[in-house]
Image (cartoon, rainbow over all chains, first blue to last red; front, side, top):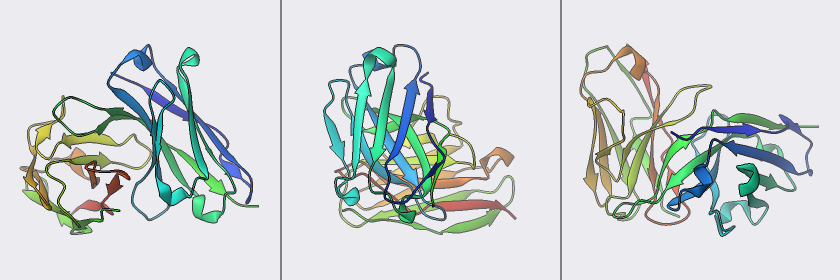
Length: 123
Length: 107
């Protein structure tokens, strides 16, 4: 069982940088077939995948954020982080972190999630 | 990007009823389709991966089927704890994309 917990400011001003951290339980980063992912869900809309990172620091990102999003990882602290710069009201959403399992013979799937944290972009 | 379309967007059902939700992909995605359940303020929960594989500890009343472009999630006998929103997700190619969600409400 993997436990994840998001943390970060709930209010960010327009044009500033949104920063969130996800703390992962135990020694989960040692799992060789896991990536670590960020998602968001704007009010009244569906889920959107932001990107994923491996323990080596290799990332894959959703082009929809036009390179405004960056994901980093600190395995010594059992955490990975998300930064989204130049935010606007459209970035207001519940942000989730999750584990991404890559099991041989299947596609990727996200088996454990944090509870999510609401980030509002407003002056 | 691959577009995922769920139907219906919402439904009302009673405890004990059989519920079916459909998800269609804008292009063929083999069986690389996952289903999630989410409730407000709670962590989303993986139900089905790879179209038809039941995630560990998920009740057997949940099942998934399909391949290519059309997929279904079935709840064989709806229970009180199943009133929630259900979303499909394709992981055939990046960017991973989701359907808009189907809200299952009490009739």
